[in-house]
Length: 183
Length: 409
Image (cartoon, rainbow over all chains, first blue to last red; front, side, top):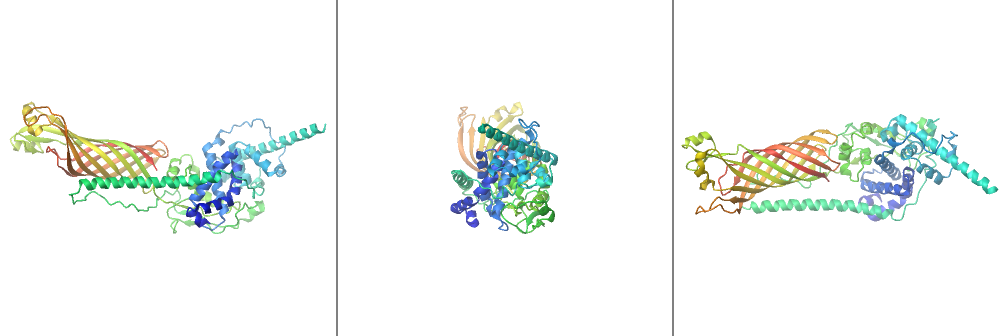
């Protein structure tokens, strides 16, 4: 299939697309603020992947190769926006999380967690994805994004606190709704 | 408190997370792929037709000529590998072992026990790696075409300086982790880096003058004029100006082949130096108000950038200029019955000039793809043959230059 894709066989390319589009879109959704932005990144990632498929050496899983291209395309989008330098110190509307327990993330459904991640400012979101999901270290993230290690750490910390605060706030509102419904 | 246990803490949850794409996404991707193929096709068609037009003009003017001096062979099938400036020229990263295609669970124990993958830093001079652009450059470039990676990298050097410096180590570091399966992502450069442009040129003849003795023999020095018994000083200056089409092909990020097409008009002007030659000055030998020749030039040369910083480039170049003179325009003072002045008339003529053009160039990038370039230089014509109506001083030395707007394709 890879050889056929390199030969610009549209049918083969479509087959490859169908096989990996779900995984790649899942990655794009984590880095994008909206589905539209995610699909833009996804489209660029596929075009670049098909263009450079001849460089895939068959030594590893094709999915991993495509995943890496997708992440880098998402980081390109971040660099276009460069919002991380414009993130203000005020975290509007959110107080510091009362809980430092990361188990709040496990209690949330995946789709809900994704929505919460998408609601983060782009800089927080990018660093949170790279650190908490992709597993990069802060040194690596600093190099990738052109910031200092300290900035990466502080931005991740704020992202995590903001996420936890969002989750806790939703829990409180849910409890209020339940309590009201019981009256 | 943040600690390392949070690194990759959600990786496992998103490991198998898939999302449904929108129905029209594949059509958009397909259109994007077709657009790039079409664009490449158009460029080759356009270049081919331009080269064919040049060949046709040369063949029609030079149907009787046997000499092909100055016309260099152009190897259109040349595949050159662009040598990119390597910040760390001796190493690329590659890997010998790949695990799975899914996110691997990250735990401290796994990290501490070390990854089962190995990372090798291999010498660059292995086969297939000699001219490779590291993947981080390809993926980092904010462009769609791989041939623009080099330029993008150069132009964004200021913003991405840290990443560029640490890039090879970063790759090795990132791919040594077990989070993502490490893969060989080196990208071979496929060359083909064209540029086109349009500009204006202006030149001034240096020492283009002539002396005419009383018997109207053209001599080339005041001493020779004395030997001929004196005469009048009739200077003619010539000043070529023209439009130029520029074509360039990057062999690497500093060296490029240049060519193109120029259309020039050379105006000849009489400058009278002493009053006593008034009658002679207007004699049959100098019977023109204005006189111009027209030529098409095909320069072929090389340019080299020796200084690059941000958007500015300085460099040197050397061109061989093939000029084909094809017309003259004369506006005589009077006709055979000494009635005048007369209206201008045009004649087709033939002629060939071979020029050597050393030059400097300075360019400023307005954007990644557009630059303005000024090219001052000298021209020397060792061969100058044109069957003009008037016996004019032969072209020798000129100074001047051109200014052009150039687009990177």
